[in-house]
Length: 314
Ligand code: GUN
Image (cartoon, rainbow, N blue to C red; front, side):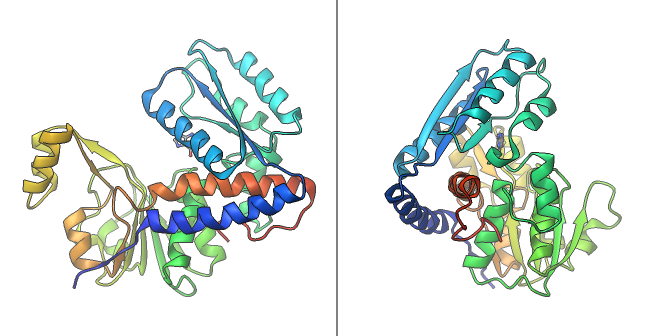
């Protein structure tokens, strides 16, 4: 059996089109949702992410501001910035790009963001809203995973869902969203006994551990939907040979590009055993920024008491 590929870029494009319409309607009513992206220091990956977030805002006609501060910024100064952004009427969403430099108290900064403007969904108030099924702002990657499942016609109601990884950003929130969508949910982690056997129970398997090709064929029930959240960069021939059964194409990519991206799921095994799966790259990744845009629009609505067209990820 060859599995169906769940094309994240295509799903992103439909979401962006729908958002474009919603933004036009809001603008007609005199409202332009605005996002402030805060970047501290010079982490190259963070620079790329933030640039991409701001560019996507521009392409949708949202107001956006990129605030870049030096790596030696103190917690106090950042708290002052967040306080200013919380007060500014034209800013609906505040995104503090992680990781912050080591001297900064990241928890304090994230908790200072007003829950109404917390478009990452990281604030304890929004976590509480998510757990108790209240309207709020949902973390972007988990919301994107639900959009992929829903828009690909994969039944969540009554399904066995197994999540490998218990992070605050992906594992825990996606478990809650799957539960709200009536799946029977199991969260696994490094101490889980006989992990492959638990994973093999899954109709929907979510891999979010950050270990290249950790999920192999023995984890996958034939026909399951496999969602791969991992993005791991392989840079040596040895790694590529260890991970790929037939490494020729990947070795060629390593030669020409200098690295090969692989998810948390072994890419050849998943193609053989799953019913449907998200590739890396091109699966979950493209959805994350789209859901950030959806959250910014949602925040603009919630703050003004305008009923939402649809809450992201629910
Ligand atoms: N760094 C890596 N992923 C994320 C994310 O989703 N949000 C923020 N703010 N920083 C990140």
